[in-house]
Length: 177
Image (cartoon, rainbow, N blue to C red):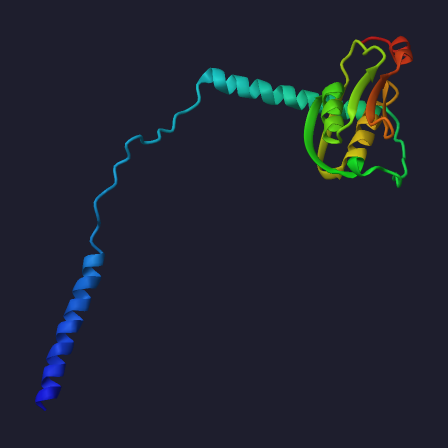
């Protein structure tokens, strides 16, 4: 009986110690003070206007590219079977802007040389590319389709070149706005 009583007393002590530890864990610690707290500030008026102007310019370029795409008739092209591996590489690109710049970028990704043939028209040609993991050859086709009859994209796999050939006839046939 004496053993049972001492065990009971011992278990009360352990229970009290466990409860004390649990309560002590709930005590808040020292507050942490940041040396350089972040301050959220409203953007100034000029920055907000610049951002708005950039958004409007981007939307205008996208609209121009959409107009150019609808100006030229739909052309159906069959998939190319005989394409070199470097033109089958996947590319991810989001672009709205001048055709020469994007054609250079795509040619470089294929490790091809970029050439411009003919005179650029007075109106800069704008293209829109928004692709994710698409073959380079498909991106070049999309660029060519957007150019319509104003220019052509020519790929020479044997010479490893991508050519942008401007159509000089287009400038004469066009009536300026």
